[in-house]
Image (cartoon, rainbow, N blue to C red; front, top):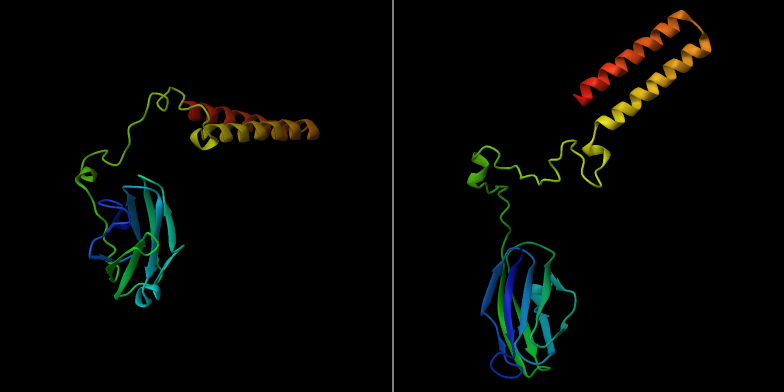
Length: 194
C-alpha cells in the first residue's frame, strides 16, 4: 500500500487547509484529500526538484462536498531527493507547503514470514461444501479441475483407431493389437476412477 499524505480541506473554515509539515517515502504515494465542507477545487504543484523525479496526472482536482479524493503522485526515478508540494484551496485563497523527502527504496529482497507457516497446513485454505463434493466437480468447473476426462477421451480415441485399423487390414496381428489397446484403456480408466 502506498504512503499517504493526509490533507483536510474546509475543516475549520471555508478554504482552510490542514496538512502535515513533511512526508518521507521511497516510492509513489497518494495525497488523500478529505473535504469537510462544500465542494471545491484543490490545486497541487510539485516544485522543480520534485517534478524532476515525480509527476501528477493533473494539477487541479475537484473534491465533492463531504467526500475524499485520492491524488496519486507517481515517482518515476528513485534516489534521494528533497522537494516541496504546494497545495492551494479557494483558487489560491489558502496555500500550504509540504516538505517531501524521497529516499532510496529498500531492496534487501527479504520476505516477511509469519508464524502460521510453521504450523502444518498453515498455507492451505479451507474448502467449502461445494468444493468438497464427492466427484470434485463444482458448477462451472474446468477440465483442469477434472484431469481424468481428457485421458478417458484420448483412450476412447485410441480404441476407435485400433478397431478401425483391425477392420481395414483384416489381419489377426492387427486385431490382437486392437484387443491389447482396448484392455489397456479399460485398465487405465479403472485406475483413474478408483
